[in-house]
Length: 454
Image 1 (cartoon, helix red, strand yellow):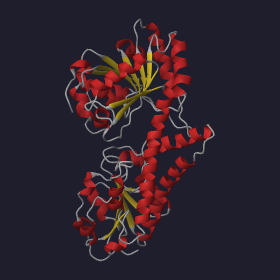
Image 2 (cartoon, rainbow, N blue to C red):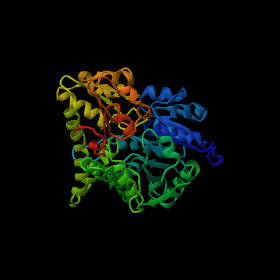
Image 3 (cartoon, rainbow, N blue to C red):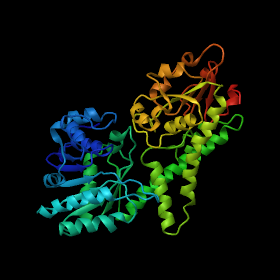
Image 4 (cartoon, helix red, strand yellow):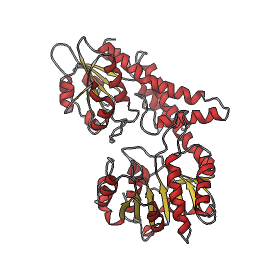
């Protein structure tokens, strides 16, 4: 990561909402030289930032916040943050609603306080909404609140941009500083110019910038994630097909697919379903949006159905492999590596399904045990180490491709007598080495090709 950009010095930004995305944004801005004032409602979060600690788990965040604590402060006053800064990023939750859309209750509450502070300011201020919202929300609901409460005109007296980030937990700092592109929905040219200059100053890779009106930017956010999830569900369907054909290997086929520039190789790793705080809900929201305007939501709904089916397919496979009174170890409870987030985690769902079927289940994850326990409760056993989880189990399922799991040795799973079954969802282990030590099943491969019984 590059050091301070001189162009950022003496510029002041505020970040409202210091959660999984807000605190990394604040840290990256400070890392590049901005003076940053963060706002949050949780005293523990405020204290952590002011003490130079990360309020959430994200690789590298603790170091970045500590290294830049002289330029990064936090408090609970939105008014103070607006008056202290020139640009404000709103990064608060937009919870999913029953019909699939997103609630603006937190965004609206924040915007009222932002507008009250803008009313007091004599100078121009840029508001950036980074939270994901439904198409039409920025112009239809956010703009009216800001204008009515502030008594000022959007696009004249203050600027507004809708600019959600395309980042993945576990690599947030890198993704924010090196985005594929920056998406800007702008109230006016000045607002877009100012935000684009911020991205050019802060991002290491000087990304391409897509500027447009609010509704197109809102549509673009949902569309990108829904297109990616559709690609993932296709990849998983391809993996299931490969599992039923002698000699087929999803990695070989996917590598060929990725060579076609119309497709590309990202997200073609057929394995288990997608999870996390964005992909599932954005896909459902896109379907809800299509339905609301009279367009068939079939494609997005099919993507979601295929994704939900992956846990059922894996549950059935594991159930066939568990001996009577045997135990299964589920390795990986975070929805992806390098995060402790368990929202829509396939590993958590698998453990839950198996326990509901009366199976004995032990679980292990390097970082997500505490969060998983909130969901699984006393339904499963919690292993103190990877070695403990493996040694006590008859079937081992690698659900999250943590680097630690890629270091498992064949000797660790080998045992005398009844061979263990190892299900490698992401194919992070060498199948030929492990097929000598256990009954190895790599999803996306035909297990009979390795001599594994059906």
